Amino acid sequence: MMGPAHSLSGAAAWLAVGAVAAGLDHPMPWPTVLVGALICAGAALAPDLDHQAATISRAFGPLSRGLCKVVDAIAHATYKATRKAGDPRRAGGHRTLTHTWVWAVLVGGGFSAAAVYGGRWAVLVILFIHMVLAVEGLLWRQARGAHDVLVWLLGATSAWMLADVLDDPGNGKDWLFTQPGQHYLWIGLPIVLGSLVHCLGDALTVSGCPVLWPIPIGRRRWYPIGPPKFMRFRAGSWVEIKVLTPVFFVVGGGCALGALGVLG
Ligand SMILES: [Zn+2]
Image 1: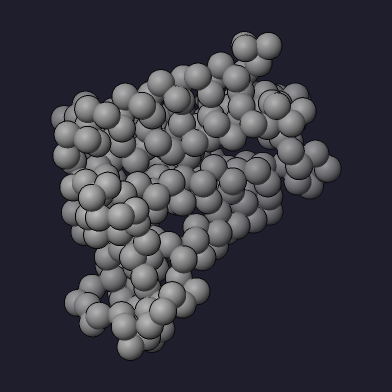
Image 2: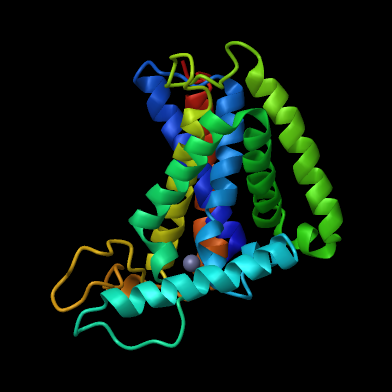
């Protein structure tokens, strides 16, 4: 899928978690609903860090372009080292390591640890990265027309304001993990979820997604999971733009009402 559909599905997925959490008596304070949805929208672009032309690889200038090269090399090396007889040879790492549940958990866990042990600046950096990505994904065309520096400024100011809001007692920094010393532990959850939602989105497209690696399936360890061929569509096709995107919008909106307790 393309950026906007990935990001919107990420936001909708977090809002659905919010609705479920409200149903299970762990309602999120509204800043956790909002910030989590934005983080998840940003994180839903992140697995494409293995692709030079992807939004995330361009989003932070030379920094992300350099990181993209490193990630692609690691992903390709991992593919070559772990492929079984049934996995074809391939030239690069796109849609391999970063498109697995293992990567999602590692990245989410890493950011959670950074937030818990790194203090306010770590939280600000995590928010900044994901707010920039959320702007790039959700405001796709507008963000492409704008100068990178403007998007970074928007990311930085929103990160700063949102961190202040979350920091207020009862406003969400201790959602779900309430013990002292666990503040912001939840911040990895929308990051894991965003990565997985990205993989699901890619699985729906023609080439599938090896999300279950390293669990072997038949003669393959990088089996591209996906629905039956006739249900798949090309990235950027009318199904994605005219059907899925509006569906994500409506579902996300409904879940947001549930998450915020508006529906009772
Ligand atoms: Zn992808």
